[in-house]
Length: 74
Ligand SMILES: [Zn+2]
Ligand SMILES: [Zn+2]
Picture (cartoon, rainbow, N blue to C red):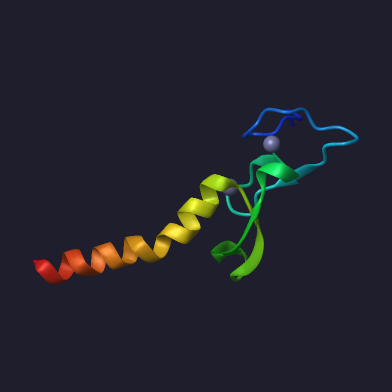
């Protein structure tokens, strides 16, 4: 364990607790886990995820829509 937040690099300690992103598994501080999203790995339970995973998880719908449109155009 490095003991640092993966996003803002602040060291974990008594005041800054370490939290894991439930999607990617990296360590983040609580201020870098502002979003709760349904995580497919955890039966779509709403769990704290990092900003990257928030974008990935909320972007899924758009990716599928894009593929669907693309397939229909061929
Ligand atoms: Zn942080
Ligand atoms: Zn993540």
